[in-house]
Length: 308
Image 1 (tube, one colour):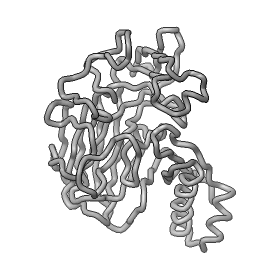
Image 2 (tube, rainbow, N blue to C red):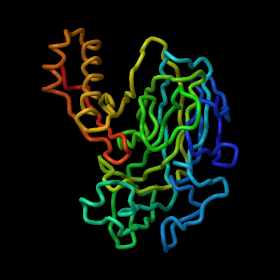
Image 3 (cartoon, one colour):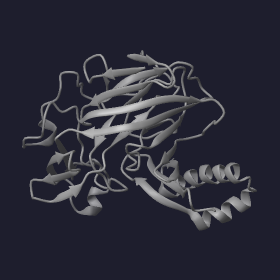
Image 4 (cartoon, rainbow, N blue to C red):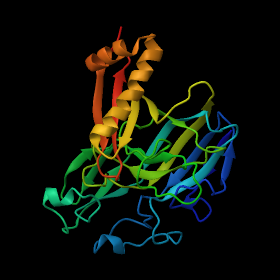
């Protein structure tokens, strides 16, 4: 079964919450095609002036985080199961924006740009997979959604900014079309939401923004896994597995990601934990996912052909 969601007053929301009713309920195996706004709820491309003064869609309210579409309930999802989200297609719109120096990250002071708002306006060519800013700099596009996640189990509204063990603002540039994200289900139905389109981003997202853009088309296929309980996000990407760690520091996040990866190695290769740690030191790469979302992220990567 295929479904379509548009970003409108019925589907848009600026928080995660287990109290929000689903706007769509699907069966495992169903595919949902959706369109998203940029993270700032913009009504159109940035035209100049202060960035906060840009026009926004009427659904926006002060205090909202990212413009998310959903929630989508999956029949049979319950705590203890794992939600599989296969990313089949991600097509950006024709424009995007990068903002630096506007207080989005505490690193601005170290960069020497605190209070000096800088905006890059991008024209995007999804067919040619390139983006060009107003200065003529051209970059390759690698579109993905920064936010893919479920609400915490605790009642109330929860910020979309920090990533959590149930996903959310992971900002992992490897979650492109063809990858699959696995998330531990926190609430009945899962209540999945998505948004925060990025046309391109480097590991770290160092100024707090990527090429933030609407997505003209995102196609996701949902499934449930009963026998693979997770403690945090795991992803299947081209030729590799990723395990994600989150923490207040990069050390804590790296330890979290590696704990999950070492557990994966023990299960996949029937290893004692000490052997898994020794092999991980030889074949596992540790990468910074992002450093700007209050909770920082690290992912560990195990290539399929690393152990033969």
